[in-house]
Length: 243
Image (tube, rainbow, N blue to C red; front, side):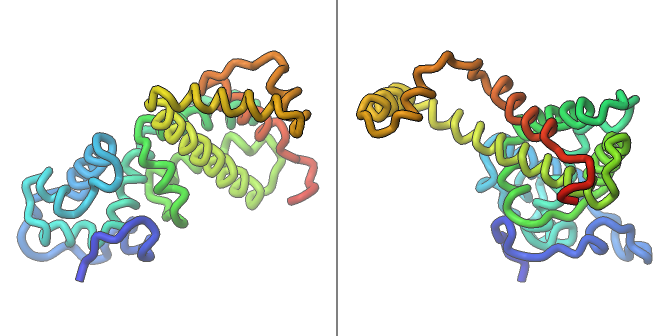
C-alpha cells in the first residue's frame, strides 16, 4: 500500500519516473496533471516546510482524492523527486559561457544558492539520499559540464566537481537556513557573543582569543558564501593529481 514515507525511505526507478511510457495510457483522460500535483507540493513545502507535504495535503490542494494521486506519485519519495526536478527548472541553462571555467562555476553556484534559499526545504532533500536526475536537473548538469570543458578535467572529474559543488551549496544553505531560524530568538545572538567572550578570556584558548580579536570580515550571508566558494573553486586541482 502506498505510504507517506520520509526522505530516503524508498528507491525510485528513474526509467519508470522520467522516460516516456512505451505504450499509450489507457482508460479515461486524467483529471489532473503530474506537473500540477508537483507544483502544489512545492507550494506547500515553501509555505509550511517539508513536513507539511503529505499525499493527503497535496490532494486537498488540487481538489483530488488521495488515492487518485498515487497513479502520479506512488509514494512521497517519488513526489520528492518530482519536486526537486520541478524547482531545478528555475535554473538558467542557456546563454553564452565566458570561457573562464572558474568564474562560470562560481556563477552557477550562486544560482544554486539563490534557488535553495527560495525553496529552503531543498538542501535537506538533496542531502538525504541519492537523487535521480530528471529533465531539468540534467539540463543544468549539461550546462555545468560545458562550463568545465576548458578546465581540462576528464569527464569523471567534471561529474565529481558537479557533485562536490552541489553538495557544498546544499550544506552551506542548510546551515544558513538553520542560523536564520536561530537568530529569530532575540536572546540567542547576545548569549553566543557573551559565551565566546568568556571562552576567549579564560586563558586556555589562545588561538581562538587571537582569532576573535583580529579585525573582522564582512559577515553577511552573501559575503560568507562567496569566501567559502572561492576557496573551494580556486583550490580545485586540474593538473591531474588526485583524479
